[in-house]
Image (cartoon, rainbow, N blue to C red; front, side):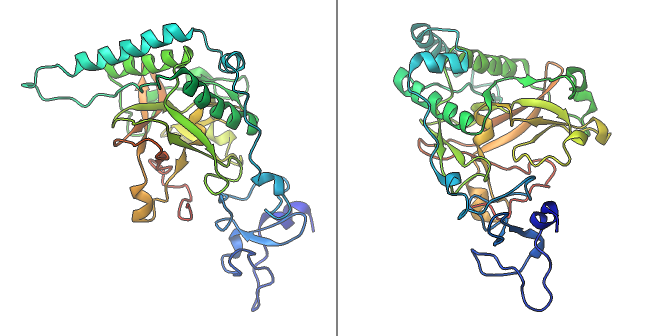
Length: 341
């Protein structure tokens, strides 16, 4: 029997179960039983912690045969010069403090608008942590996760030769239309991007947790200070490609960028090689009330100056220490989240 056949799905048993899951001792759902390529023991995709959303390509080893998968990765050095180089930061810490103060002044001025006029809900820029040392720790946590997943930091959509060109990113192709980001909210988004370039990161910490996320990542993200409702958390970035080129891709983090009426024009963001903190934010189990209560972010596609962009935005106030979650099925309802923790 070929390797590909062996490791795809366990055979459907007749009366007795030929293969059972080592975790739940059941042979039910044989189409979701995955066989280890070393010991031939079976595991349900949804019984693994963290779960696997689909059968991976290539060889796969079970938790018992792959002890290294659960080891905490080596932390990125907490050295300012190394962090500055990793994130290509362009500004000093003294200038950073001035920029943070400017953000606060703008927010205060915005709150003094006449109350006679009905308030429009506007997006807010994230407010970085004031302590420079803590900001370095936050950035080091992200660098650790990126290096562990063999990705480099990027805060942009990237267009690689042989994949989708920039010209394919056209909001007019969106099926049913796409919400246009207002000028004021676009300015807020640009402010967030500028702060990132200066080393003023969102107040977030990437945490290693072998029980959450997916087997390919094992990381999750939590708030490192209070975050207000409607705050821009981050933009979802990575390489842009046509979905038709990625239909057999086993990547666990692809995000729809453009859902076109013509499927051949649909675009996805692939953050496996170039990405930011968005890749490590986990999804909710949207099949249970308990899972839905955990959601504190919303994922929204916008037309930003004639280009499709994906933003993760706080949909309620978020307390310090609270982990971040959003609904992976905001649009297509095709992602298998029923077994999420």
